Image 1 (cartoon, helix red, strand yellow):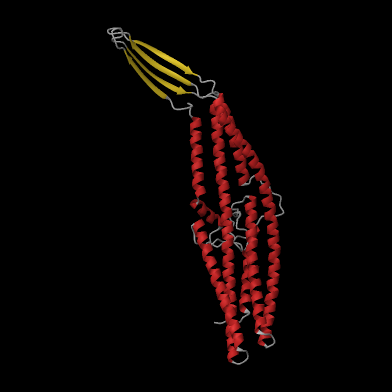
Image 2: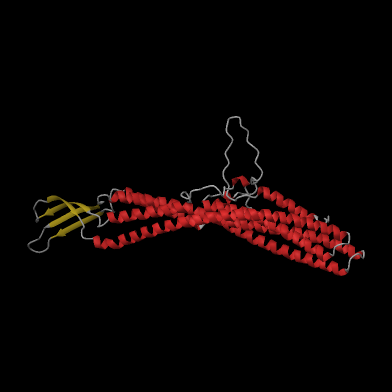
Length: 434
């Protein structure tokens, strides 16, 4: 079935209007369940993702399971747990067992024997065990904060790729509608050329524009295939992400605190970890003292009774503070770097938040402008089509009007996706996961 030339722009405008109602931030906020024993489950509001299209939260979980950052986070948690187990032990190191036996040789020492069995226990210095426990806890807190920050960074990648995928879908839809419009126009021109109302050159011009539209459609489809492949590689699913309700978008004018931002929490955890390492190194100014307990059995000579004794030894290393200076200097340098990084991060997060708010406001204003422009050019193309049918407008003028209307419709649709992308970037700047 062939449609009139004005049908494609009208259909695209309807599609833009419906997508505008469902476009929103990619990061979804959970909705509150109904309360009360007799409350019925409400119907899903307009714009809620359909069950067949996964939300960005599900896509993020799939991407996280496939990411290298997930394996790194697991390894850091295991390392932190191992350090906590070491800090909970009563000894500063592994005990050692020593077995010694001496036998006399020669005329004067014939028959003498000495056997000694001892164990050496490394001991914690005063306050060292508590420092190690606090350092292990700081390491665990840093590992958890690093995992949340890695999730947030991955969420940014998922949001950006989902936006590019949505833009590719819009381009394909616009190209198909433009191709359908030019197909109908080319068929109409061909009939009028056959009837003698138009010159054959008009049919050639209409066919040339149709072939250009076909080429643009093929290019848009190739771009869509590439974006889908990238989405599959990142998330492990071929299902395209769904859009959420516009009511989930954050208020750009609201005053928010970035103290709970995942990157800010990671920077704070890095500072605390560096401080605990400095305290740990200061508590370990010398090697661990050792407590030795041994049993000794001696036989002075042949036929003489054995003599047993117990030995207790305490070894206290001293004078090792100069050897500890490189470790202390490295720990202090790490603390200084962590403090500067935290300060710079706070400035960067504030700048990114201001930029995201400005981009959302600009994208929303431009979306309104593009929508009004598309409406005007669509109405103009409809009027020129009527004038062309009446023989008052030339075919080149009509083709230019249809091309301008199609470009405006495509720009309006792309700008709607740009608004969604700007909302997602605002969620990202606020440190909010999907």
